[in-house]
Length: 241
Length: 217
Ligand SMILES: Nc1ncnc2c1ncn2[C@@H]1O[C@H](COP(=O)(O)OP(=O)(O)O)[C@@H](O)[C@H]1O
Ligand SMILES: [Mg+2]
Image (cartoon, rainbow over the protein chains, first blue to last red):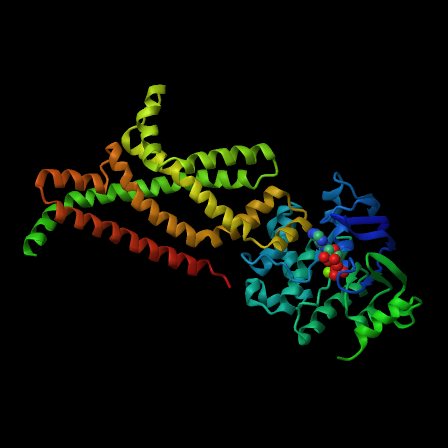
């Protein structure tokens, strides 16, 4: 579904990604873990063209990413952001139908009906007419996920979807992502929630300094990593503070 | 004091008509300045370098010329080229152009304050640049720019008095004519000052009320 091959990216003179290659199959959940600044967000952002990669190829659902195919790629992959990035001047339901109505040119009434259904799915049916500012972080992120789903994407990219949340709000968002995984949605999730990744992910990739250090079945990478660097990172993340 | 009051009552109808023209002039010039200002602001943020250069030239030229000279250009110079505006319209155009560069600055400030991450959210949804400008940057940026619009509008209200120099019968000119014919300079100019104040205070209050309404969180 998503295939990166020898992708490289530099910001100015700084090489951020080197030779990044991996494949995420349809229906697979891949978790990207790694220290802050290692390039996880940059990897996600090259996949939907928010950053342009310097070298290598990215293929999504059989379409090679290029300037020309960018709109098509963005219709195939949705993104969920760490800071939700909901449109503050629009209500919850308007946020959700924004893409379907204005990008996909769907009928507004049909889009609205589907949006209500999606809101029910993320447990926010009663907040359709609220503004994002009136919601808790966990609720906003669930709206963010509904907005991503409304585009009927082939895959969803999550960039630390729970990092900006109060601890007691993390569970409700992870529960929604877990359900999507059970429904067979293809997902690439950048996360520091190792326990969640162990349980939900099929594949885990450990990134350090823009290089994929380890890529394998989630259970193996996250419980018995083969690389020393992965082990040190996991020790650090899992050690109780 | 009682003489001031009797004079005031006698002068007010004339001055009120002048004030009405001042307000109409301000509102019309405001509309022109906002429309042009939006064009300048969008040009200034364009990805096409020639558009940005054109914008820089226009903005710096307009900013560098005194408003009174700009009004003279519209009213006295354009007729030489066969473009002849009546005084009021010349005032609207001149003030509108002069103020468009301040409005552009207000708008640009507002647009640039819009969180880049919201632009990215739109981009990720597949929205085009134009769509992002129209549906995200403009509505959010306009709200941020609202307080500066208020200040600019009060300035415009006061600077509309410059149109008196091209014979627009607005408040200042009505007052001048009244003062010349009655020799009551003191009374007339105190009244004019009070009327400008009376017009600008509700304006400031209206802007504040709008701001409150636009604060959605
Ligand atoms: N637009 C940018 N310009 C310059 N440097 C950037 C930019 N975006 C990210 N970086 C740098 O690239 C590196 C990787 O960033 P990022 O992918 O966000 O890491 P992570 O998500 O793993 O924390 C960081 O050192 C960051 O400072
Ligand atoms: Mg990141």
